[in-house]
Image (cartoon, rainbow, N blue to C red; front, side, top):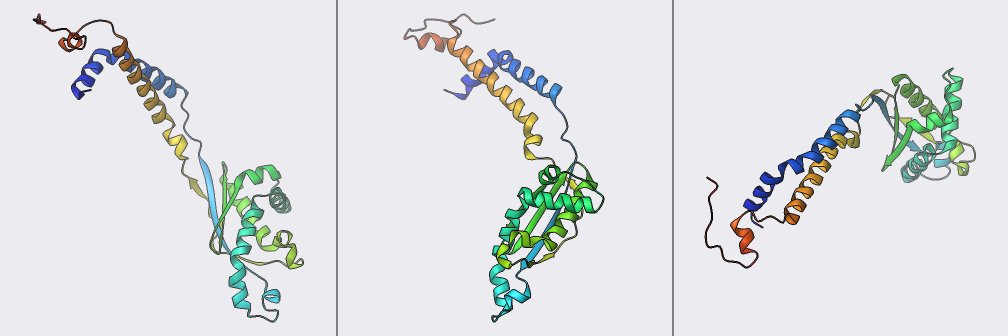
Length: 224
């Protein structure tokens, strides 16, 4: 199909293509809500075996480096558990900042890259984010033996590389693209309707329509 034919179809059926785009776009604008402002903090940590274990007859530096990646990986998994959320909730209660374990767990996320643990804290309130990040840091440093029974109740050495500074988080990609996706979907539906209307149109409008039927055109009456 030539490009000129596409343009001809759109000129003829533009109104049919516009209706879904206008309806879906109008509905999207009417129901659109700005993404809520959220806050976040990121804290990075390093971790190693305690010197009393790492240096038990071996080179302490070697075994600290060797085990650090395993330790941060285990800590990252521990952060995602309900046990860690309860420990953070207990720490917050001790600081006169009560918060349920479920609320704390909903704000926590973690990852690790090589030998660094990365703690992510997000929430709708900057004070809550700062409190959770501070409490989680303290739990990681003073109660990590709960995640490592093989250390015999001795905490691994966890060092924070960042202060829990809170900043405004950027809205998610989905919330930013929600309205454009709706408009694009409406336009796609409209174009599909326009081409379907052209395909099902029984009227002969142009010389080429007659030639497609295998007939020869003897003459044309001009529009003017």
